[in-house]
Image (cartoon, rainbow, N blue to C red; front, side, top):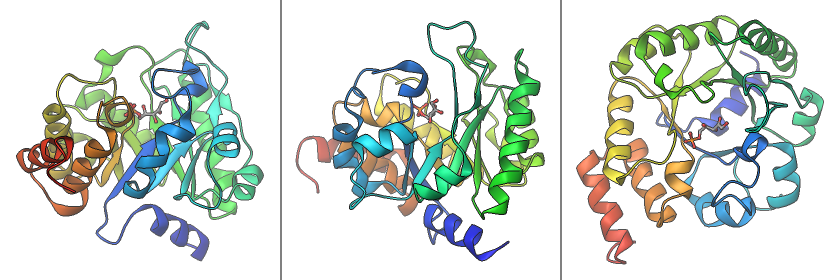
Amino acid sequence: MNWGMKNRLSRLIQKDGHCLFLPIDHGYFQGPTTKLEKPGETVKPLLPYCDAIFVTKGVLRNCIDPNNTKPIILRVSGGTSVVGEDLANEGITTSIKEAVRLNASAVGLSIFVGSKYEHQTLLNLARLVDEAEEYGMPVMAVTAVGKEMEKRTARYLALCCRIAAELGARIVKTYWCENFEKVVEGCPVPVVMAGGPKVDTELEVFEFVYDGMQKGAIGVNLGRNVWKNEHPVAMIKALRSIIHEDATPKEANELFEGLKKGKKK
Ligand code: 5RP
């Protein structure tokens, strides 16, 4: 691995081998989705507690202070919208030259395995990897399911993650699922977990994150369940305790409740 690649990965994956990435890229197909109408304001209080943000070039340039930020994972796929025909019909939206100019630590792109656009999105990944590797830029593949959340099974996600790694992704982002160890075991590169739509209780989030970490995930790329929470700072601090301090779901929940009530710092 060349120095640039190693250095970029070490900015993202912390000394303990774990990471907490905060995605705020949802607007690239959802528009000004709730709580992300002003992404710069949403993310500001959360920045001290994440290890990187996942963001598009437009939001990065316009909403994030270049003097005070965390490593950037640049979302470089898109071209679809929630009102369009098919969310899977993505292309590459940003060049590696632009990613380098924006001082990105990695680029991220979605693949849609099993969809009508499987071939196209897998070739997007393969081409992006070839170009990115020339510049020592890691690619994070996102195993997207579009609107079909029921696809989140170990068998399907293991297939997606393995294909992403085979095509050269340096990190794979996928969903947590039952028997998550099967997903991690079949994937020769580090796996991080997305959160998915906001769930009812914080404890549910802490439980799946903890389970995934026990089964070999290196961390999360988790957005809505943080910034849609009424207490996003308490939420990200509690998640951090699981990812970087080995807290149990119960301990994380106690921390969350304490922070929420202002009893803990
Ligand atoms: C959106 C994404 C997000 O980065 C990913 O889904 C993680 O966010 P969340 O925890 O909200 O699911 O790829 O396109």
